[in-house]
Amino acid sequence: MNEALLIAGMAAATMVSRIPLLLWLSNRQLPQGLFAALRYVPPAVLAAIILPPIFTPGGQLALGLHNPALGASLVAVLVSWRTRSLLLTIVIGMAVYLLWRAYF
Image (tube, rainbow, N blue to C red; front, side, top):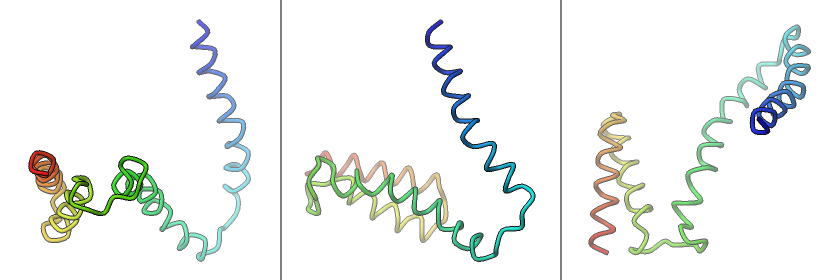
C-alpha cells in the first residue's frame, strides 16, 4: 500500500510541475530558433548517457586495448555508418565486444 501511495505522489508531483507550463505554451507560437536548438537535445542526452561508460568504465579514463567497450563502440559506429542497419550494428558490436574481452 505504501508503494502505491509513493507512486501516486510522484505522479502527482510530476504532473503539477509540468502541466501548467505545457498549458501556458500551448497558446503561444515559439520562435523557429528555439525549434532549431531543440533538435540537438536528443543527441546530446544520448551522448551524455552513453559516452561516460565507454570512456571511463572503471571511473578512470581508459583509452587503451584493455577497454573492450571503446573498441566495440568504434566498430559499431563504422558498421552503422556504412550499412545503416540497426540489427547488424548491434550484432557486430556485441560480437566485437565479446571477442575483445576474450582476447585482451
